[in-house]
Length: 451
Image (cartoon, rainbow, N blue to C red; front, side, top):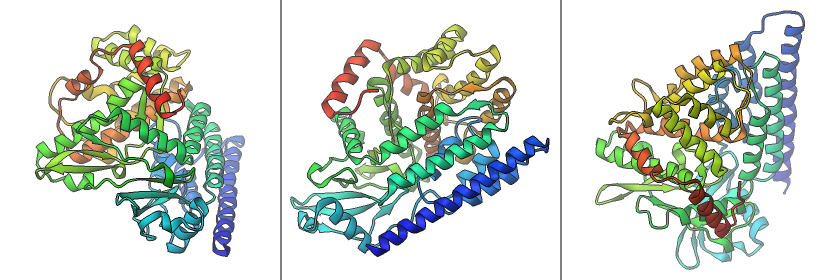
């Protein structure tokens, strides 16, 4: 117990230090503006990265998210923050035993046929252990680090401070709704009972789909901070970077379906398309589909928002500006000038670009994964800075982040598809009333909260 208390004390001290450092940067920015001194963004960004560099918690996840939203934070800040490490080193066996006892009681070990106290993987909120159930199933046991609720709240306080710094720089984007959205999703990630329900939702959605496998939850070995599920064997996506194009395309088709089908048919997305959240299963020596592994970062949408996404696509396809603007308004963008509409449409054409192009192609041409969307984002940055500010609707935040992340994965694979046909097959026959009915039935069956 003493070691755990020491870790908590160290974490608290570190957050206090970071808070002081962020506060000093904010004070300097305010002073420079007060006295008419030109603010050095690059220097402030480097200082901010140094202040946050010791943290291994949720804020590093947030940094990658913010870098995909044009002008959510200055580009200099986004570049520095995305270089920070997001994964924590795993805790040792003594920690795992203490946490398992805290969640399942002193006889926890007797509830497994085997349990490996050395972590198989670690992330920002917890770590995964391999185990075997009493009935012989291979399990993945996801164990949350202690005090993570405190860590999330501390990180959100730092994020609020970062946004406050940005607000003093004549921002192009109002960040109030972004902060609310990030806070809601991070707090949800701490609730493993909700993650279990999201996993069951996806199991229902893909029950008869040969391309996507979803783990089975073991509820008797799960709690609010402990999640046990069946282990799905598979290879890493990047193991296929040099595979034949047909193999890479098979993986891309499965991933496209895993993301767009739940959105268009049930109004839900997997909000963190990170390479580590997928693995590939094979049949007859070739990729047959993907294992979808992590359901902590999910986002459910009102059916009207889904309708807006499809309306925007069809408006762009037909060159129908009125329909495009209506779609933005459906999403929650209000009071848009013509210049802001033009700026948003540059970004929309980038996101939708491959889906508008009826030919086989890469998801983006002449672009590396690390540069995906950067040129377009910079163009939009300038328009928003000159003509903004614009208020970003909450639902847009994770939709945008997930679309960028998914495109980056397709670039890593070097896949070539007719994305236009894949998308149109997915949305064929879309009906708002049917979506509403289907969403209600599925969410009620799995006890997932309706949006």
